[in-house]
Image 1 (tube, one colour):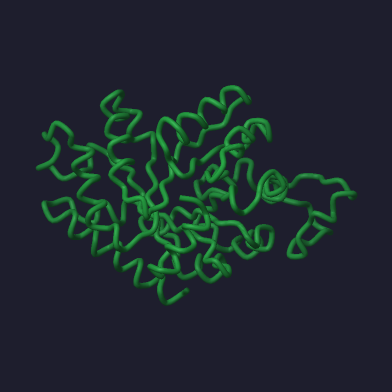
Image 2: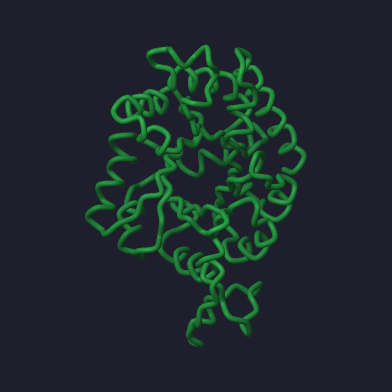
Length: 283
């Protein structure tokens, strides 16, 4: 599924919910833990219960890689179980020198045919370029995160050349130092287009969303942090929506662990529906 198809799904379903399948074997209901394929059985039930209320699923690969071969098999089975009507994201946060990134891109766009993958841009354009070369695939670059450590680097003031002020969106005051995350967004937006580039923007950074939307008026933003992490769906929607929605709001724990009992799938469906219903009021 490409961005055009994703926009159609958002308009048809009137929501922009992404359900995060961060499936932790230690947190799934007790009655499933002894199942020989526990992670997949859990995921399958969650997908069946939530697919009518979301447009996307995000698989955090760390929760599967930590289980070794069995985890990789569960991830692959989960990916193929997700309906083709839903946008699939490998939350893998890859990024390395060009030839290594080419192999990562092959992993998540060919061997495991995800629609999108998250990448870390610290090593620069040649580490991201191999992902962008895939047609009808989407590269999701870390832009501004909501973890405590984001303050270590992302908000550092950086000097910029006067001759590139023409690239500066009007919403950024040219007389103040540019912050590192702003520089990252401005620079990376030149490497691709809104059809093949998205950005991760943490929901607890809603105060920055107006500036970010000014930098990236046409790009989709993948926004984690709503729900258990305390991000406000109302604020994210107010400052982040554009004419094509332009948002995928990811909710993981607040949906998939809505209940720890045998009714876990029913409660997950109810939680997803509540988010979807709220989103309808903002579109």
